[in-house]
Length: 243
Image (cartoon, rainbow, N blue to C red; front, side):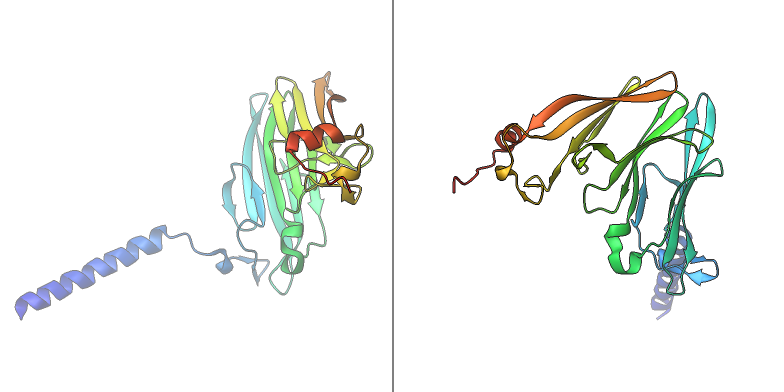
């Protein structure tokens, strides 16, 4: 009987120790987060920033070094509505705002209002990155900002006739003082101007590569490769009906 009591005490002690360790190391769900006196209802991954530091569901800090000096970028949801969802998203560098998104409707449109910041790169005096506003495709913008928050480059429409950055691929490459961007006029690889790519003129340019070159504090753009409808259909192995 004495042994049973001793074993019981040991088991209880181990359980208590386990609970203490769990409580001190467990990352609690962000539903417990309060902001502006309101319970936040933003699930994880409603915004994404490469290599976030000091982050929670509504805030992220990112440190980058420009010309030997550390620069602090912050990304945060603000203006919490009564239902717990935020109305505004703001991004700043060193306290200076460079991006703001008002009238968010995360509770209803969800992924249409996702805020995704990727592909950060320091180029001379500037920080280059991409912002994808929603995850439904063709919503990416290429940005370059300085350390005071001034927007030096903002490219969404890369060229005429709905040529946009082709996200969900390896669409951006950095090399020395250049940025190469892959862009497309197609939706979902098959639709061009609201009809099948098979109906496009064979010599119509439907995709392309563009190179941005930084020189003397300015970016210049040049189309470096064209992909016609005929080439695209061949590259993708698309079989078009002859009807």
